[in-house]
Image (cartoon, rainbow, N blue to C red; front, side):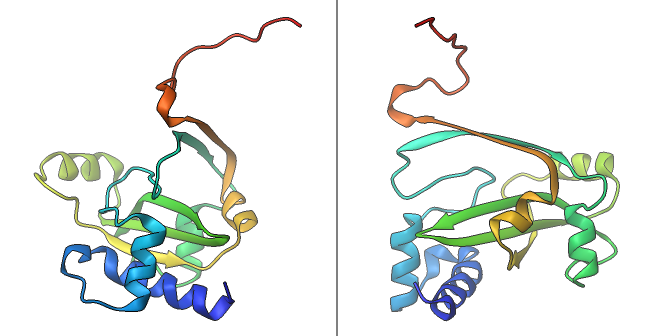
Length: 162
């Protein structure tokens, strides 16, 4: 996919996620629906077919954090905190988004979110970066994927001797 087309689709994707149920017809939106499977917004990874499922974990980078990156780029307001980051690779194009919540103290943010019934109000900030740049935001980053139809996500395993 040409870079300009990928950027345009990324913009349409991010603009449209908040109102996916109210989409008017457009070829870009149809393509995004095809790429994402028309998935609603949740703090959970998903793909069009869900062939592989899993978990991810990361340790923050003490030298260069997601919040520092956003602040240095002028993308985060002083009264906001990053509560989630998403990474998607759609047919070879990388999409990264930071999800910001109003507040700075993690305890008060946790309390505020606990008091919300329904979707969490966030501000989504799309980020243009490579996989390598994304990985450098973390000290350690781990992803574990299992074949979704097996239901083994989170199960213990042991390696058999040859």
